[in-house]
Every structure is written in structure tokens, then in C-alpha cells.
Image 1: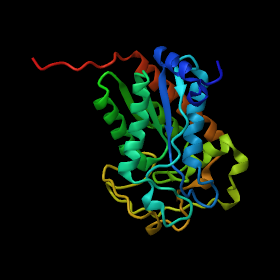
Image 2 (image 1 turned 45 degrees about the vertical axis):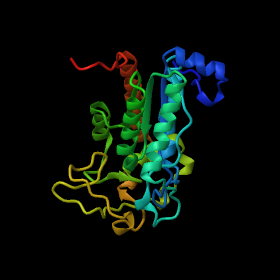
Image 3 (image 1 turned 180 degrees about the vertical axis):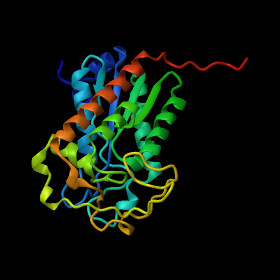
Image 4 (image 1 turned 180 degrees about the horizontal axis):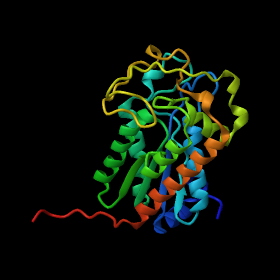
Amino acid sequence: MWSRPLRYERLTWREVRRAAAEDRVALIPVATLEDHGPHLPIDTDLRIVAEICERVAGGMSDQVALLPPVPHGYSPHHMDFPGPVTIGWQTFTEYCADVGRSLARHGFRRLLYLNGHGSNQNLVEMAARLVMLDHPEVLAAAAFYLASPEGLATVERVRSSGRGGMGHACELETSIYLAIDPEAVDMDLAVDERGYPAGEHAWMDWVDGPLKLMPWWSSFSATGVHGEPTKASADKGVALLEAAVAECGAYVRELLDKPLPRRRSPA
């Protein structure tokens, strides 16, 4: 049942203390601002992950405390295109970790960073790990949306493009934005482009190849696109968004079900 999210920033300090005592999961959307082709706004990653978290927090209003999104991430390879705001990897990692450390200091014991920008992922995972090292009684986790087996099954079910069609400003992201805010998407300007130096082990799609390779974006994309946004539709976006919300909700429930960690002295 949809309800109103418990928004962290709207609480008084006494309400923050009460929310932490209720053993809620602190849900932290993380993204970036960067070019997304001629047809999508630069807030695409941010808008999508914020929408997912908003819906999860609304549907689990007694189990989640929703944090404001972290809007700026790690995007140096996009800086040839106007629009991105990039944060140094160490600064970004420590910033995200400090958000988690602050929540732990206030009594939250279960934290979930939900990331919407691929190049953030390793850094957000490190931030979650740092929080747990500094606060051994805390569970802090990081996830990218539509990356679970169930999420990926939905991706494969709805897609029309082959491998490479869901890379960036692509069929997937364009579809979800069409489902969220179609007036912000100009499909007349959508173009397909696949310039990434793909091979047997290195490729870019919603799940990338095992050989990780990320040159300057302008070296393989003239438009900022990698994929096939012309195959996007709002109907696909609805299915993908619903799957992403269900996936994130499952992560929240799993964190709530897990016992909190305890350090032990070696025998």
C-alpha cells in the first residue's frame, strides 16, 4: 500500500532518534549529473534512482528512512561533454562514507546505498565497507539497480536491442525516463550509437563484460549515447521501474532480516 515516505530531512532531531530506534533501513540514493545524449536531461541517473527510492520508501514507510539523494558522483571520463559535475574518487568515496558514518552515529544500524551511475559502483561499495569497519555493529550495503537475477530477467524480457543496446542514454534509461516524465524526453532527438571498443571479453551493456575498460567517453561516442534509445518506450519503462522497486524492496527486507554483526576475538 502506498504511503508517505519518512523523509530524513523533514524530521526533527527527536524524530531522527526515534526513527533510528525503530531499526529502519536508511535508504540513500546515489547518482551523478552527466550528459545523456541529445534527448535526455543530465539528471537521468539521479532522477531514476531517486524515483526508485521514493517508491520503495512510500511502499515501506514503516521500515525505511529515505535520505536526500547524493547528486554528484564520479564522472571524469564524461567531462568532454558539457554538463557533468565530477567529484574526485577519494572525495566521493569519503563523502558517501561520511553520510553513513553520520547515520551510524545517530543510531541507524542498517544502511543501503542505491546507486544509479555505473562508475560510482565500486566507490559506493567501498564507502559501505568503510562504514562497517568504523562501526562494526552496522550493516551497510551498496547495490546498483536492476542488477539482481530478478531484475536482469526483466531487462532481458523487455529489451528489443541486443548486447550493447543498454549502455548509456540507452533503451533502458530512456524507457524508464519516459515512464517517469515523458515531457522531459525528446524522442525526436534520440539517436542510436555504439562506438564502445567491444570485443570477446570487454563490452558495455547493462551488465558489462568481465574485462573492464573505460576510455574517455568522447573517444567512442559523438552524441554521448551508447546504445539504442530509439527502441525505448514508456511501457518498457513501467515494467523496468516496477522491477527495480521490487528489487530494492527485497534488499531492504534482507537487511532487516540479517542479524547485526559482532566482532569476535580469535580463538
